[in-house]
Image (tube, rainbow, N blue to C red):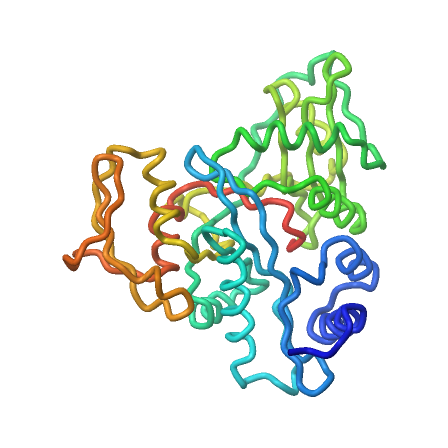
Length: 346
């Protein structure tokens, strides 16, 4: 049990972040004032020093026609002097136990570099379950509709979040941000000097777009939401005009079986029965037998499951398909366009 005060824990966790990552002081000011909470922080001390930490957040996620809780791990950090001792595994395991107790059905992590995909599979049981790729928007054939007005607002007007929420909650397999989480991601985007624009039709806010010019000289749209095609076209036109000297692509979520798809986020199931019941909610005719094993963190997931006639049941019969908690997430998600946007990772 730590004897550090919450303020001292925050200070030391931030110092650990500074040691392990290359983020700016401005980003850390934003993250530790608006994202970090004492409840989200999972940490390990040696003496009176925080030597390993991560933050575990819970988001609502549209999931096969229903809404579930999904966990997300951020800022996994171990001090260089304490690496190779299993501390990262301990952090991840404890974070997932906490997320499970908080009602999360699954847990997500976005590896910061390619070499970490294997790390999270070995140290958290995660498997790649979300993919994305660059897609070039269609070339313009007509100018934007006359009633579409694109703006670049510099505030956090409430109507912006309302528009985001109304559009995003209609998208299946999409993680959704709270008001505070959304505006924190927006503040981070603006901190980088990137483009954020909105569009109005007849005075009503009908869409928004997050875009930037990357180091490779390519302009990319990282998130674009619109209530109608005219608003979508107006946003793309504005981005194209803003970055007229660069080729334009959109970073889209795609299924992993799409040609050109790149691994993005990894997932593992925290509550197999609730996860599978949610799958059945949208696929009542699905018939499948699957076994889950090797989950030492949440051993209640280890069982044989029979899905048929819209019902989930446990069985003693060993099925032909055996997998892990990460493999179960991959089985039902990897082929879909899972939307994990504005996670402050790009």
